[in-house]
Length: 152
Image: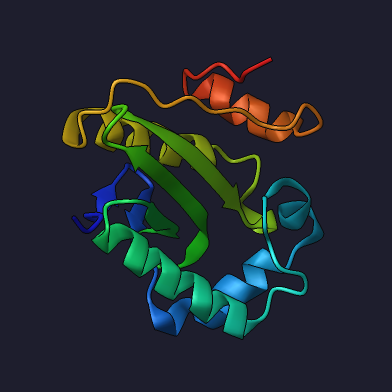
């Protein structure tokens, strides 16, 4: 199942596309993003972005990973959010990051809330456990504001 475009009051959450590779590389080649995101290459190149976009497409086809670009309504890519469902366990894992210019404005919280609606209403998951590093207070705030409690 492909991830449908999810519309929020300020955002579009939709699959990434190849023409976005340069913008994705620009946003992801950020020390803060790398510090808090597992398996992020450094430097984050356009080639790495193309590979990520292709893996994301394949993951969605296999119903293993739903990756969405976080976009403004005008279409500007701001960051990435993903959900890795486990149909067998009716659960999933959440991950996200957002570019520096878009932090501390509630965009990530808005994206998390809407992806959780997709997880529970469309995919019919029962739980989406999530956590963040203790040193990532910004991510902890996102989880709290979205109604999710970070794991201790």
